[in-house]
Amino acid sequence: MPWMAELLTRKIAESQEEVVQAIAPIIDQIIKNRVEQDKFAMSAAIAPLIASAIARQSAQSPQEMAQAIAPTWAERSKSKLCWSDARVVDGAL
Image 1 (cartoon, rainbow, N blue to C red):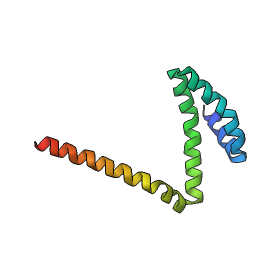
Image 2: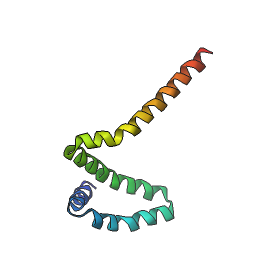
Image 3: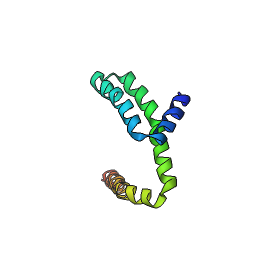
């Protein structure tokens, strides 16, 4: 599988549209089949692509990347703090 991730990463660098067109039918088929094994295989194949895209974007424009994820990160942090506070209160009662 590492060679597949490398090939797809290179292909993304060359032309994102071609990659989307190539992967879309596979994703559609997996969604239709809803087979857990296929979902796992696709997740395993796509994960390196996502990681590569995030790493590349982060390296090219770290400030823009930080601004893009800041609202989501802040919301998740607040949510986790609220749940943590609720557990402390529940434990005290």
